[in-house]
Image 1 (cartoon, rainbow, N blue to C red):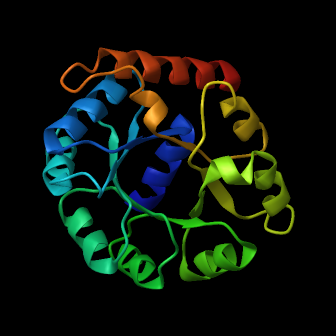
Image 2: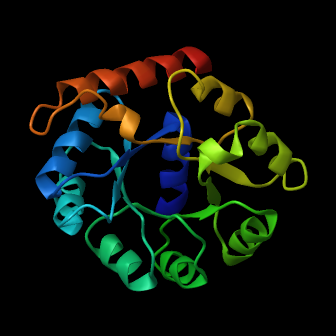
Length: 212
């Protein structure tokens, strides 16, 4: 099996992608490590994190076995850099044909952010296997079922506004996975990531109970 499809399988199995925006590389690594300790095995480090390439490399070279992806990727050059530094998947807030081509060249999954059927069909034609629904808080969980009516072969990952209270609603609608962001760091302080681990454990427990 191509590594690309192994990555997609793992993203789907875990159902949760932690979206990490750190104040710097060390902070991103700390948050990511706490998420991994809490049981989340798919991590998306945003390029809005200063020195994020260092974070990718540190996390990718770790022995956790977690998937490390690059988020907020806006151009093909950034996508290529992130892949060279160890990113297993690439996520952007928009759809870019150039990013899709680079990711296909390296057999790395590309998850573009889309909101309209036109954007989603363009992403499908470019080879995207999963589309990020962004912002999920604006779309609402019913959006997933509505889109999968005319596009049943489309895998959707909502990001933005996902929390413990509504995560089951998103999964009920057929979400491939969900992106969970700032709620994971709620109550934590830089350098002390115990609360991040606890928040991650709550999400993992909720999803495991849903899947059992």
